[in-house]
Amino acid sequence: MLTWHREILLFALSTILLPPLAEELFYRQSLICFDHKKRLPLLIIISSLLFALEHSLTPFGILIALIWSIPLMISYIKTKNVYVVIVAHFISNFVVNGLDIISIIDKMF
Image 1: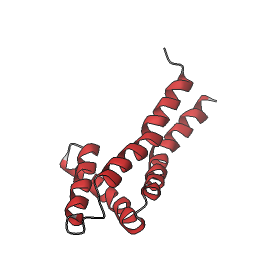
Image 2: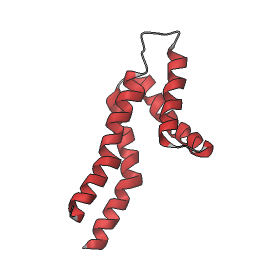
Image 3: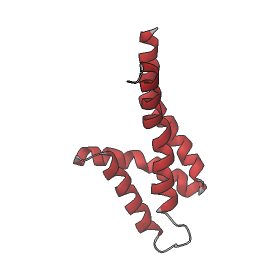
């Protein structure tokens, strides 16, 4: 049985740190190829749709995830640097989930 320290650590890893790495390396770096100029708009749309579908199953949730993906996509297209997008995704995950973790830890002490 895991202690609460390990549970919080696993929660933080699985919701704050790992998703930006896995998702951005796949949805941005692997799916979008800047060498194919004619296919680039299609690749961007496919990447954004897959990103949104992975984050929600409801139409409204998919729309929200598409909106969330726009700044990430723009930053990747402008910089062509996946690390910029990983950091941006990490920051947003930290704001959403990290503050909850800090609050839980604060209540425990």
